[in-house]
Every structure is written in structure tokens, then in C-alpha cells.
Length: 295
Image (cartoon, rainbow, N blue to C red; front, side, top):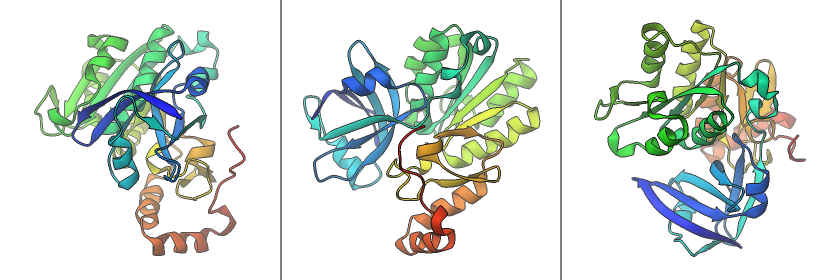
């Protein structure tokens, strides 16, 4: 059993929980995810790690209520327990395992859209703590749906955080792509690497822009994950000329190589029982991934 130490509502249908999970907290790195099972009979839910504290032996998750299982998780209060919290799963952000001297030579641009702001946070925090230059763009529909602005400011500094809202109700007005263009073209900021996490359509257009700019971009394909082991076939995608699975091969990939149109079309088809059967028939033995564990 895993005790919930903190539980709060960040915005409508968006929740934050701090969970006591010593083994996960000890081993996890930015970019990875975990699997939560609310009760013994509950389904497994893959959730990205928003934060971790090795000393306190805790991990933080931020999630939205979509289906029955996520609503049941949201009903939990501080002092309640989850049946299971398994992880860390997936591969860490690539810079975690690179020579720090090389990473410090780069200027990173992190882009979080909507709920994607949550998994961007541990990356911003890690980079800043290791002395790496980093700017962060947070995009959201409106002021009421904005999450983690202050946490991001605390991590990297107010002068490095840029918030934009679709409706212009707070800070800048427009999509994250407009902010990227403004920072690069108008403010003259130079970046060596971009990391974008958020809705598929947002990542698609970020990559389209950064490709024109010649700015290498990493994207996290966690939005298409379901069971987190490769066994369901939900997160199958094409990266370059290869079949990959977000949960066992990622969740992060070279954005220039991801076929977003195919992934979004497949996502829509996978949402129905008939669609899942069709995909399984069409994809044959490539429908499911290797569930033998992380690399």
C-alpha cells in the first residue's frame, strides 16, 4: 500500500498528489513515468512523474480526470492509500545520461502545453539544479486552466518563464509556437535543444516550427500510453522508418522523426473496440511491443 501524503485540486479536473513511494523516488529521473493502481481490482493507469524527493521518499503526480479510473484516483484524500505505485518506467530524458560538461554547453527551451506542464517541471528543475541554461514556455487555454507557474518560476527564475493563454486572459496571447518565434526572432534568444510535452497537435506544430528553425526537438509521447508495458498496443508509433512503442522505447523521441499524423489517426481509431481489432489485424505481430522491461 502507498500512502497519499498530499492531495489538492490545481484546476478544473486537474489534480496533484504526493505519494510515499521510497523505491520509485530513489530511482526515478526526469522523463520517466509510473503506474498507479487505485484499488486491488482497479485497472493500471500510466502517469508521468511530476516531481520526486529522494530524501522524503515521495513522488508527485499531476493528472486529469477522464475516465472511471482517473475519477476514482481523484476521489482519494491525504491519508488514503493506493494499492500499487510501480516504477520508474520508461527511459529518462537523454541528457540525464550524457556527460554533464556537454549538457552545460547547451541552452534548452522547454515547452509545456496544458497538462504537459507537469512533466516539463522535473526537467526544468533538473537542468537548473545542474547549472544548465533553460527557458520554459507554458501554454494553456486560459488563466483558470494554468498550472504550476509558481513552481516553474521557483525552479528556473521568473525571467525564464513565459506563459501564454489561447484566449489572452493571462500574460501573453496565443499559441506556444508564437512565443517560440518571438523569443528566437524578436528577442534574439538562441537555443540548442527544445523539449516539447503536451497535446499531440501542439507537439506537431512545435516540431514543424523548430524543424524550420533547425532547432533539434525532443517530444514525449506519453499522451498515447495506456497500460505502460507495450502489451496493449496503444502507443505504437512510427519514428523514422521504425515501429516504436512509447512506453518501452520512449516516452521521449526525436520529434523530427515522429509521424504525428499517423499517431493521431491511430489514436482516434484505437478509442473504439472495433478500431482496436482492426489495428491488431492490420499490424499483425508489430501491434504489441516487447514487454520485457526497460532498456
